[in-house]
Length: 67
Image (cartoon, rainbow, N blue to C red; front, side):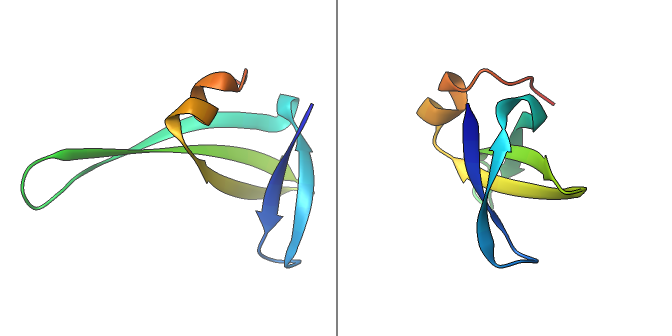
């Protein structure tokens, strides 16, 4: 299985195998004190790191290790 990322350097969509993908959670505290969590996937393509923000449902469905 492969996941599609956007490579900023080449300005093209690239396919990265799931074996080269890690799941990450990015947590942030807003001004009003609430906590916001964003879900992302990080992959390695030709030695560069590519990132893709996804929904929680997609994050949970992908079988990749967490960082």
